[in-house]
Image: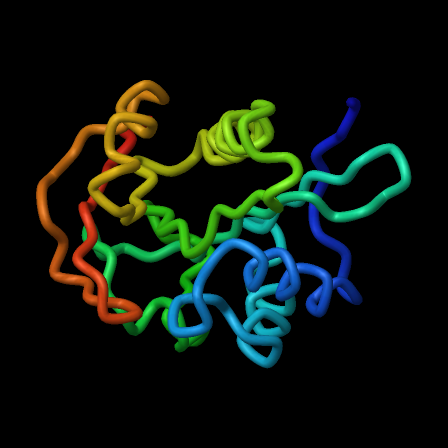
Length: 161
């Protein structure tokens, strides 16, 4: 099964929302109006994986900031995005269930890192069950995050560029 990675298109907010809803519970998934804002203001930090028929199978999106830690407001307030920020905050990484376990998330992460060479760090939060996955990709676990997005306990992970 082949796929490719590219920047999201301006008109793909609904498709990206569908990927999020397929992967996250409603209290954690990004909804259409916010997804649309992320594409409008931070499209250069938004990559998608598509299959041979251009069906969206995965996404990774972020904002840039000069803050060093991820906070819940980043998920909903696009005005916190600073295109010149030294740190990227990954807001979503999702791969539709049919494509999970096939290397799509890893490929999205690697492609994302490649386009962030002008930054200092990439920060994300994940559930404890995913910490070892991100460690394999070169992230360091900073422990339990201050973020409680979606009512969960998250680990903050950092990748130093």
